[in-house]
Amino acid sequence: MSPFRHQIEAEGLGFSYEDREIFTDLTFSVEKNQALLLLGPSGSGKSTLAFCLNKLYPEAVDGVLKGSLMFEGKKLDDFKPGELNQKIGIVFQDPESQFCMLTVEEEVAFGLENFHVPRQEMEAKIDHALALVGLQDEKKTVIHTLSGGQKQKLALACVLALQPEVIILDEPTANLDPLSSTELVETITMLRNEHPFTLIVIEHKLDDWVEMMDRCLVIDSSGMVLFDGTPAECFGEFTPYLQKEGIWLPKVVEAAMAAKKAGIFKGERLPLYQHELVAGLENRVDFLKKARVATVKDEPLLEVHGLFARDYLKNINLRIRKGELTALVGANGSGKTTLSKCLAGLIPLTQGEIHFCDVPLSKWREKELYKMLGYVFQNPEHQFITDSVYEEIAFGLEDPAAVKSILEKMGLLKHAGAHPFTLSQGQKRRLSVATMLIHEQELLILDEPTFGQDANTAHEIMEILEEKVGAVFMITHDMELVDQYADTVHVLDGGELVFSGAPESLWENQEVIDRARLKLPFRKQLENELVRSEMHVTT
Picture 1 (tube, rainbow, N blue to C red):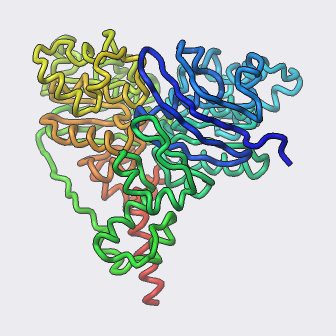
Picture 2 (picture 1 turned 180 degrees about the horizontal axis):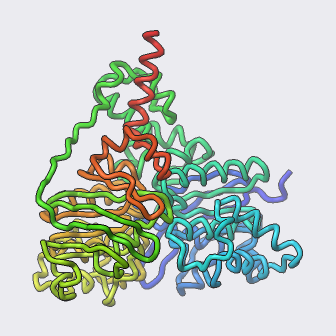
Picture 3 (picture 1 turned 90 degrees about the vertical axis):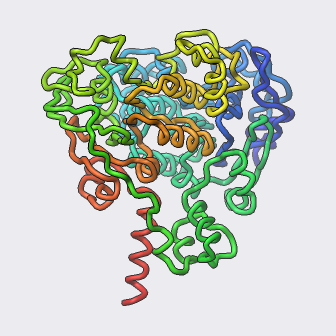
C-alpha cells in the first residue's frame, strides 16, 4: 500500500503576481500513475498551475502562492533544490524557454548531468530518449536550426531521459504535424504501459488523448475548479458548461451533438469514440456534407516564381489571391516558416522572384511594404515592442475607440494595463494577431494563428480573419481549420510544394496526405467511416 494518501494534493490553492489573481481556491488530488486531462479557457491559469506543481512558481516570477500543495505526503517547500524537478518533469508550452545548450545531444545530456547520471550510462539514455521522439538523426544538430515541432520533441526527450514519476505536458501537440501528434500519444501510451507514471496533459486537441485519460479537471475563466470527474461525465452531461467556458470538445462529441440536434442520433449518451458515433447515427452520410463552399478568387495579390532559398526550399511556385484565405501545411521541418518569411521579405531568396501587388518584392521600400503586408511570428514575443497590452495595440493607431474594440474582440480588455510578457501563451498569441489586424494590410501572413486558444477565442480569431478585406496566408497543423476556413491549401514536403488546390481535393489525395504526415479532418474521417459502414450493411 502507498505510504501517502494522494501523490499530488492541493487544498485551497491560489496564485497571484503583479496584483493579479491567476487562480483561487483550487482543491484537487491526483493519484499515482493516473492520467489527468487539465482543461480550461485560455488565460485560466492551467500553465501557471503546472509550474506550481514542480515548484518553478512562485520563485521564478516573484509571485504569491496560497494554500497547501503536497507531493507524496510532503510539502513542496520540504524538498531540496532540484529534488522535485527530478520527480516531476514538465514540457513547457514554449519549448525554447527551457533550452540552454547548443546541440540536441548536449541539451539531453545537460539534464542527466545535473542529476549525476554516470557518464558511461549517458550515451544509451540519450539515444533512447531521442529515438522515442524520432530525433535520433538530429543528435548533433544545432537547436536553433530545428523547426518548432522538432523543438517540442526535443523538450519531451529531455524529460523522458530522466524517467520522472510525473510528466506534465503543456500543449504538447501545438507545434506538431498531425501524424507526429498521433505518434506522440502512441509513444506516451507505450511508455506508460512499460513503466507506469503519472501524466498530466494540458491540451486543446483532445481526440487522440481521451482514450488514455482517467480523469478531467476543468478550471473556469475565474480560476476555480468547474469540474472534476471522468471523461465520460465531463464530455456527457457536463458538455454545455464546457461550451459556455469556450473549452474545446472532442470532435466526436461535437458531431454527435450536431446529429442529436438534427434528430438523427439514437444513442442515449454522447459518445467519446468514433465507432460509438457511427453505431448511433441514422440517415448517416447526409448531415456530414460540408456546408461551406469556397469561393474562387481570381485576382492575384502575391505571386511566387521559381523560389529557391536557404539550400532547402526548391522551385516554389504559388499564388495568393485577393480576399482569399490560404493555408500552408506540412510535416515538422518541411520549410513552412522559412517559406512564409520569404513571402514577407524577411529572408533573402537564392533564386526566383516574388511579386506583391504587381511589384517585385525586392523593389518595395521596407516602410511601404509593411503598411501593406503584416507578419505574425510563430513566437508572439518576438514582435512585442511596448510595456503594456494597450500600448501594443495603440502603437501607430490614434483612435482609442478602435483600440478598445480590438481588445474586446480578442478578450484582452481586462488585461489592457498588463505587460505583454505577463500574459498566458494563448493571450500573447491573440495580442500578436491583434497588432497586425488593426492596420488592415492587404496581406496578413500568420504562423499558427490559433496556437494555445480555447474554442471561443480560436473561433473569434478565425471569424475576424474571414471578415478581413485583404488576403490571409496562414501556417497551421490544424486540419479542422483548413477544412472549415481555407479557400486554397498548399502542401510543403522536404522543401518542395507537392500540392496546391482546394481542401476537398487534398482530402481525396491519400498519397499527399501520407507523404506530408497529415491526417484527414474529423468530418472526412467520419464520412469515410460511414460510407464504409453503409457498404458493409448493403453487402
